[in-house]
Image (cartoon, rainbow, N blue to C red; front, side):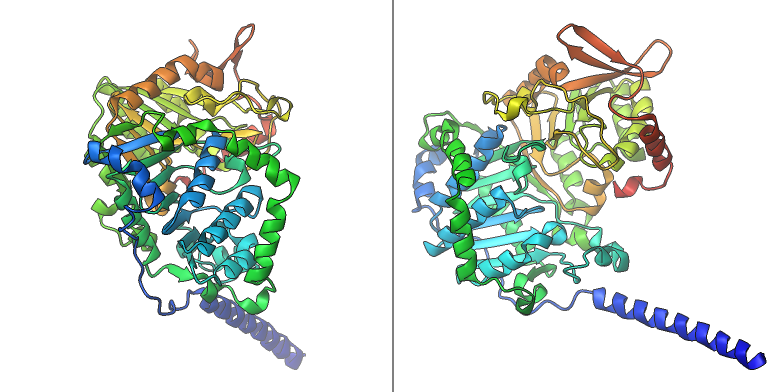
Amino acid sequence: MERQTTSGFLSQWLKLAFIFCLGFLLYACSSLPERMPVKPSYYISDTGNTQLGQLFETRKSAHEGLTGYHLLIDPIDAIAARLMLIEKAQKSLDLQYYIWHNDKVGALALEGLLRAADRGVKVRLLLDDNNTGDLDASLLAIDQHPNVEVRLFNPFVYRKWRMLNYLLDFSRNNHRMHNKTFIADTQVALVGGRNISNQYYDAGESFQFSDIDVMMVGQVVPEVAKSFDDYWNYPMAYPVSQMIKAKDHQLDLKQLRFQLAHYKATSTAQNYLNLTREQADFDNWLSGDEKMQWVPVHLVQDSPEKINKDAKRSEHLTFQLQNLVGKPQKQLDIISAYFVPADTGTESLINLKRQGVRVRVLTNSYAANDVGVVHAFYAKRRKELLENGIELYEFLPQSKPNGKRKAKKNHLSALADDTPNPQSSGIGDSSDASLHAKMMAFDNQQAFIGSFNFDPRSANLNTEIGVILDSPTLATQVSKDLDSAIMNIAYRVRLNERGNIIWEEKTPTGIKVYTQEPNISPVKRFGLKMLSYLPLDGYM
């Protein structure tokens, strides 16, 4: 009996030792290898003789030191701008994105980049590795082109079992490159909230993000290009060929070229491309028929060192934003897809209000939020904000009427259709449309557009980029558009005479009042309430 007990005891210890060794081995293998030697590369500055350079030369000379800008609010305008810039580029294309999906928009953009590379254009594609799982084969194949380089930022070691990366090295993998920049010939730069996916460009059958980009020429463009270089040459940007093994994928460059060309020829792709060709705004902007606004523009960005928690305070976007804008004196308008003010943000907004500043926030309602869990950590601050005079509006869940596009608009009411979707959704689910824009306006004098959300994740964990436009015209227009359109696109959230939160929705027959949060069941409401008690604000 004693021998059996000893044997069982040893057996248990052997099992534990095996599990420990396996865990240690997995953890060790989850660490990033040293990056292979790569030659640093930088943006091409001598591009004045390109088609894009010549196109803007006269206008840039007339506005020295300033930046010409054009807002891209309509989603078809936004993809038309990208595809046309790819077509017109002659020397370089530098693209940096958080998400690049293997879908209609992703395939058409890759096909355009491949043809640009065939023309001799140097293409650099830098992607955060959090959303590239279904693109490994395509990225490895296009990287074989002599004029294309692909790098993955903060890459995952385990390519198939991607969740293992978070389980084994959460601290590193929880920091992501959230930047979105697009630079053509170092002459035109796009910065904003859109990634490369059907959901941002009205290319899907149902769910869509409502977003804003700004297209710029002039003084700020080389600064955006320099920012791209900082990330491209950072040690956490790994050549795709180091992280994705050719033996795991059968797709080569020739096959990828065939697949992309074949897809582009399909009626689905052609119908969508025809939509982009019908957009006149971008052509007019390029030709000079549409007047550009020329203003001082300031780039604000996180250093890539933020990924490793090594960035100085002055290298944080939030510090630069505060330095350039200062403290609003009269009005602050915030449009943020994910709004989680946490302790510090809540205190700052309340202090502004106490000093006489009007503070207005537009964020997603629960049903419009594509990340339901985030809503829990906004909702826990809602009553305190309202009690202290902060104005809150929550984006209505939207639906496409009959699957057709509405007439294009170029003001903020275009962020939404006017047709509410009464369907509720589960935690982490989303409605047919979700606010994804990140924009702020200060005292009707300055406006911010970029990738930065008003939440702890953007402030402390992810890297972000944006621009501050010293444009009273734009800042005032943001305020006016919100004044005139906000009740068409959002619930107004306020306190009733008893101090309880209510939601007001504008309908054809008048104002409809909800005493409980709309489009959420009691069970889900309870679940979010319980979730909000967890100490997770800093990860949202």
